[in-house]
Image (cartoon, rainbow, N blue to C red; front, side):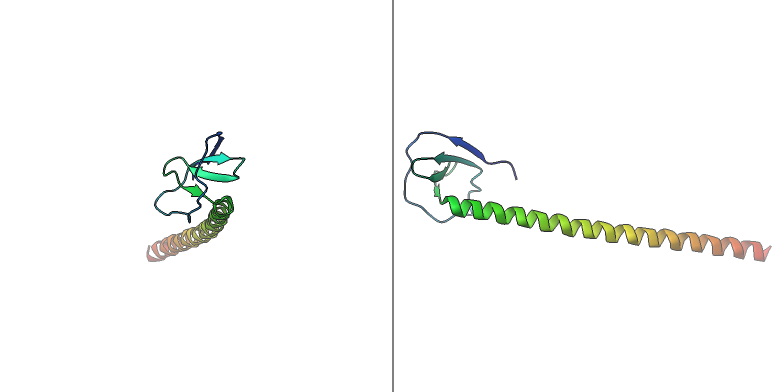
Length: 103
């Protein structure tokens, strides 16, 4: 997720707040200090700052949990690789013993 651009401009914006829209990702926002509101530069929608921060925080939580899950999977896969390598060494050793025994 690219960083959000909080460029402050003294532009007047609408004060009607609408729910967070799923069609626009609201990546570029204007912040109006006087009205204490955010407005999306793309869709011109006024966004409640609390809703924006809540969604941003939830997104961070999801990313953190996904990283933890991927780390767990990585460890599991490394353990499986080590087990396969051990089985391969054992099979090669059995094959060598069999070849020596048959000679």
